[in-house]
Image 1 (tube, rainbow, N blue to C red):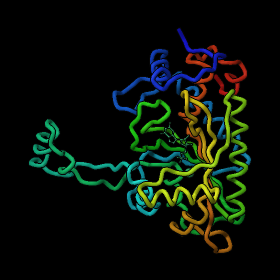
Image 2: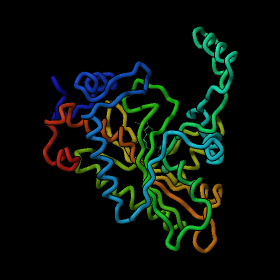
Image 3: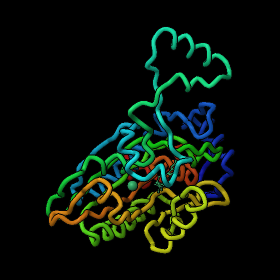
Image 4: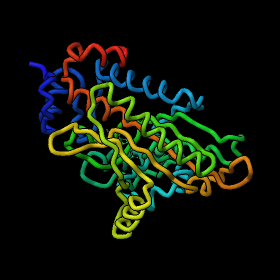
Length: 308
Ligand code: 5GP
Ligand code: ZN
């Protein structure tokens, strides 16, 4: 049996996950929040990626598809470690000789801490696609600012049984850098474009004020400030029963990245930035939640939009 619209009753997370696996869209790896994707699932993600590219093509953005790792020095400057230490992931590597190799194998076979025989590498895991962009933009922007379309596999250490909360997921973002007004206008227009892209796919979405999950006691203050100042909004929908999940977000960074990475507007003042990010895996899961796991049974209009 396949899950099918139009019942449109969102399932519990476990039931949605079971259907995705049973009907050949995802394969579980045994690690919570880490899945392998089949060709059928990837066809949906490609369709969504294509729609995002089309929706923002008028900005003529530069395009960068980042690797899943980012220079540790650049990562340190983004402020991610200060705000979200609990979500980060660091890559460690082996640089020893024969003796250390024997020790590594001995430790890795048991319960001992094998990471003590490893060294931190030059890279950490990318937590958000746009964070890999700003370090590359030091210097002066062209007159009229700059727009970039960026993609990356992102990592966040939040193991969960919720199929919509992955440790490794794809993000497709459109970033504008320039004046404060340009950045704010991009966020506003971009969120509207996101809604205009998602609704015709059959998703019931809402735009809501949001905040990032800042760490610790001080984080509560930062989260409240971010929300009060309207710096983050999310486009949410229901993927699993009883909760709404962000499938996209719009973020105003003010001059945070501009001042950190010495990015200047054409007139020499510090650049402001804003990003609109799509969680393409979540959009894909939301579509399965609404239309079912049998892609051939999806409404013809939705299939056409996704190029299925
Ligand atoms: P943000 O930087 O706003 O937290 O994330 C941008 C977008 O990435 C979110 O709106 C969401 O669609 C997606 N995203 C964030 N966390 C996760 C996650 O744990 N799993 C998945 N599949 N997508 C996520
Ligand atoms: Zn971003």
